[in-house]
Structure formats: structure tokens, C-alpha cells
Length: 300
Ligand code: NDP
Image 1 (cartoon, rainbow, N blue to C red):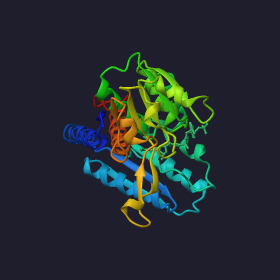
Image 2: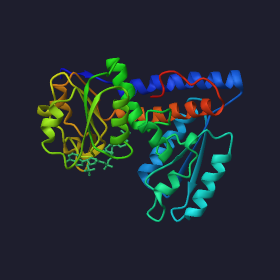
Image 3: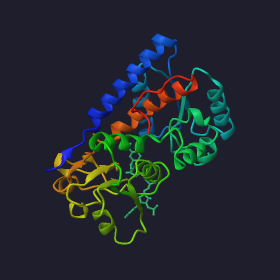
């Protein structure tokens, strides 16, 4: 491996430390404790794990964590009523509705019912529009984490060629907006992109957010480029024993690390940054709600 490893686990611990310091100051100087409400509908096992770990880390940085676990057959009206209650609650500064929602619930309707100022996932249409027009917004956590790691590694990103593979609303599109905001020349690639290897080979920065295990091989990577691997894919790992599995990203780590200048691992790269940025967004939302200075370096 020749690439520098961008350690998301270590970086996320640093971000959580900054958040904790800011929370401590808010509490000591202003008597304010930021509060994050997480709403989970149903019993999807992966969602339950995420919600548990979000709650634990929220408390660890000194914030209030409120969890609402609703039955899988909760009606849309009941869910919207809960969100309206949380919107009106001055002790709640961030609201996150864990996705995906059960099929009978309209995700867009539910997300757009959250007060945009409390929308710590950054998925509300107002926040999407504010980000797209370069205005102050709540920024989706995963792309924000990627941006923080890129800024930390490079300093300025101005003028760099960036390719984002994937055009989802939660990762690919906001990632591209953020890179554009930092003056990169941005290409968004997707499943219909012609000659993807050639497109990727031109990039100084590659962000892979596809959901296909080890899809990007090292010979697509420009020597010295920075590779941010958002993908989380579980594959069989017979080397660990019968029936065992392991997590891999969207890039083939070994061959890419041999060519890249820097690379994030999976696990331990983008994943831990996502929760750290959720906490950062909550403290930012709390500061904005109270007209107080925002923590530096924790927003786009
Ligand atoms: P989506 O499935 O919503 O989007 C995937 C994108 O990849 C689509 O735009 C799709 O193109 C594109 N794509 C699919 N196949 C190809 C291909 N062969 N070549 C080029 N592009 C392709 O996924 P998400 O954005 O939600 O997530 C992407 C990955 O990131 C997943 O592995 C997910 O688990 C992970 N993830 C990780 C997070 C973290 O915290 N680390 C957080 C969120 C997601 P098209 O639009 O044309 O179909």
C-alpha cells in the first residue's frame, strides 16, 4: 500500500470531542443542553442498531437523546402528529426519522414535515434547495463527513477534478454540491455513464457511493488521487470460517491503495464520520435556534 490511510474512526472521535466541548460550553454558559430526537418506525434490525448507536453517542457528547419507537403499522397521521409535537418542543433541536420507512408511509411527506431548522439529516426540500444555492443549510451527514475528511487532508480543494459515482439524494447529489461549493470541477457518474473507468481516471478526488462491492479497481484511479469510499457492502468471507461475512466498500481497497495518494478504509472510514456529523449538525441547529455562535469547522 502506498496511499495514506484517512482514518475516519480517529477523525470522528476528534469531531465528537469538538462537539462535546461545545455542548459543555452551551450548558455552562447558557444553561442549554442540545436535544436530538430519533424516530424509528418498525423493527428493521439494521435500523435498530443505527438508532441505538446514535442514542449512545448523543449521550456521550453531553446532549439529550430522545428515542421514539413506533409500531411498524403506525399510521401516517400518527407519525406526522409526533413530528409536529417534536417541531414545537423547544428542548428538541434535531429530529431524525430513521429511513427506510415501512411502505405505507410517504417518506417525502414525512421528511418535509420536519421543521427545516431541526432537520439534522439535511433531507428536507428547503435544505436541499439552500445547499443547491450555496446558502446556509443543514447538510446531509454522510457527504458532510466526506467533505470534512477531504478538507482536512488537502486544505483547499479549489480547482481539483472530482468524480462522484452515484446520484442518490442522500449521498451522491449533496456530495457533488459540497464539492462544487469548495470550487472543485465536479462530474457526477451513475449507472448510465459511458466509459466510467475513463471518467474516474481523470479525477483528483473520487467519491464512490454506489452500493456495489469492490466495483472500482485500482487501474481506474489516477496515481496520487484521493479515494473516499462511502459504500458499505457485506460479502461472504469463507477465509473467516463457514458462513462468515465481512464489510467491504465500493472500491477494491488493495488495488486502489497501491495507486491512490490517500484512501478511506471500510469499515473505519466514512461510516463513523456519519454519526459524528449528525451530532455536529445537532449542536449547530441548537446554536442557530438560540442565536449563538456556531462551532467552527463542523459545518460546510
Ligand atoms: P443508492 O442505491 O440510492 O444509489 C446508488 C447510485 O449508484 C445510483 O445513483 C446508481 O445509478 C449508481 N450506480 C449503480 N450501479 C452503478 C454502476 N454500475 N456504475 C455507476 N453507478 C452505478 O445508494 P446510496 O447513495 O443510498 O448509497 C450508496 C452506498 O453508500 C451504499 O453502499 C450504502 O450502503 C452506502 N452508504 C453509506 C453510508 C455511510 O454512513 N458510510 C451512508 C449512506 C449510504 P442510477 O441512479 O443510474 O441508478
